[in-house]
Image (cartoon, rainbow, N blue to C red; front, side, top):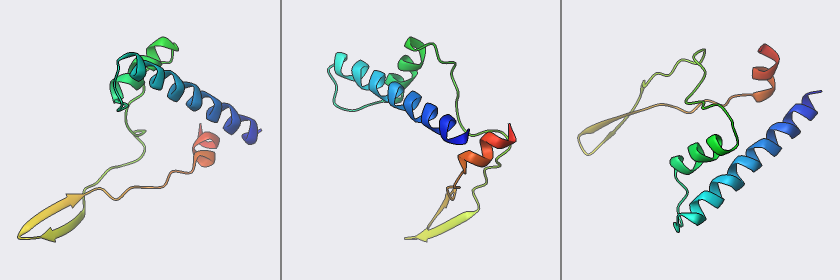
Length: 88
């Protein structure tokens, strides 16, 4: 069951990327932007989704000191899609 879901998800992502690249080429640009992806979502009738699920907290607790400047950053989390799908 999960293999079928993952295959469907992969196919849908490829479809979104192909449509986004098509929009980028029609705009005569060489860089894919978020606006291209948003327009692909609209053309494919996919509802907008932004950011992380609200169940994943984001905290900027990691700090790097460089040349008397403190840089705070968010350590990327690895999200297991199988666990996420099983929860919902």
